[in-house]
Amino acid sequence: MGADNRLLSLKNINVRQGNRTVLDNVTLHVDAGEIVTIVGPNGSGKSTLLKAIIGALPLAGGTMVRGPNLRVGYVPQRVPISGALPLTVRRFLDMPGRVTNTAAHNALTRVGAADLADAQMAHLSGGQLQRALLARALLEDPTLLILDEATQGLDQQGSAQFYALIDTLRQETGCGVLMVSHELHVVMAASDRVICLNGHVCCHGAPETVATAPAYRALFGSGTQGALALYRHDHNHSHEH
Image 1 (tube, rainbow, N blue to C red):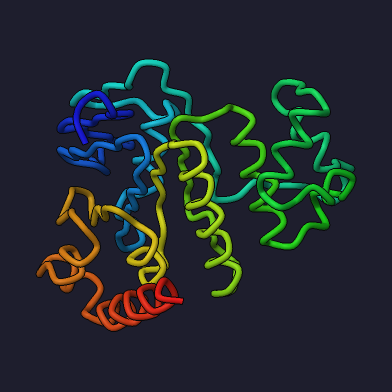
Image 2 (cartoon, rainbow, N blue to C red):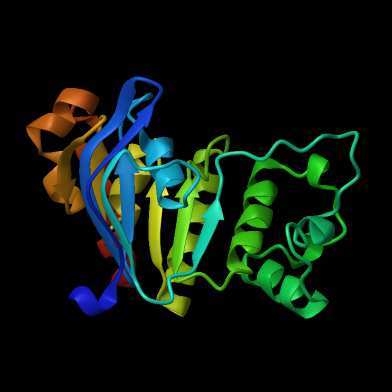
């Protein structure tokens, strides 16, 4: 894709926390309609990168260029919900700004959660909570959807369903998707491009390219290649029917 489709471009960005450089010379881009996934070990700066992109952390160096009319929908890793504070899903969608009942209903319907409007946030299952968070992100009418470990705590089937939903939304809206994930087998199946991060960009490219890169294997071993091959076989097989 060309520059006309570029939603976000980072060039040689640095992020520091205290005296420590967490991200060093990170360069990446996201285009409209593609799913880019960031993988890396714990402490590699994945969440820090997303926070820098949404403006929650300052850059210590480098440049970030946002495409014209960029609208970001952000699904955080977790939202602390107190059981002592009654908060329905519908009320949650009014935070931080009130939305119409129609907009709220449409967002919940798109994520398959129309029946959750009156449910208490504190009582939702992991999968239901992620759909509520995603619905709130969709209220921004995002051109770029950013997800930080959005399937943490879900079982494998729940994760697969959630990623399928993200893919459907991407196809329906043409938005770009930038997500952090620890689930290597799903990442390899669901992504157009993968960026392997460990304070800096170790390797990047198509899933098949990254899975065989020495830097990736040094961090994760070669176990995901079998999962990737299995996915490709199942995926291709399912398309034949």
